[in-house]
Image (tube, rainbow, N blue to C red; front, side):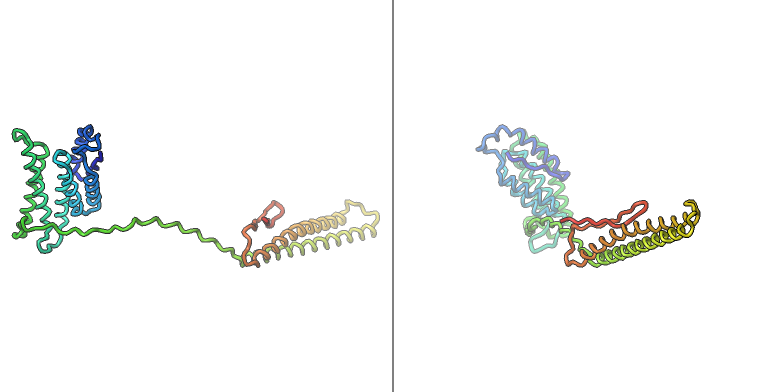
Length: 312
């Protein structure tokens, strides 16, 4: 059996409890598919639409759906009818509270009139069914609600003396087209970062220039070493008895070793930097630089430079 959804409004909490209790007590009878006392799918659908309209803040539309569901529930389902009736009354009161402009015989107060008629019919039916004229809890609640409804109507009539339920009609409900549910926006792909060819060319030129400077340092070191070697040879030839520990020879040897170190360092760093610089210039000069090229600095206690990685 289909189950009516629980109400969310404070006044409808008792209604939800009554609905659940009624379904439990009548579950054995509803086990058969052809049970005459079962709730039709149309009534359940109308009630669900009423809940949706009420939650969306459209009490007039909710009252229309609740009224449709109430009319399709058999008189044997007393608890269910009472639960839906109370939701219907609250929807009418909410629609009256929203208000609106009067259009001919259409007036928001007609919602109070409709609620009063529904409660009056329910109370009369309950009194006919009850034995010894004993009032049921639902009929007591309905009576109190009707008194509240009539007080609200009399307050409205005090402001507009020509209000008469016999002449009033419910305002027409304009259907609201919610349209299709908005689809989630597709995430935009991250823009590809363009390769800065100009920066690669500048880096290649700077690195290549550094390599040329280092090669120049290598040449300078070789020249200095050769001069020191020639000076030492001339000194030994002019003074054959000169001891190796002589300060003059030690000074010439120091200059020679310094020149050789300069030549070695300049040759290694110059060759490496020049090669990296040329590679960067080639990559930067291409229209679509390869993404498989990586360059990073390399530092050591006594040396430094750039490392180049190429993937094919």
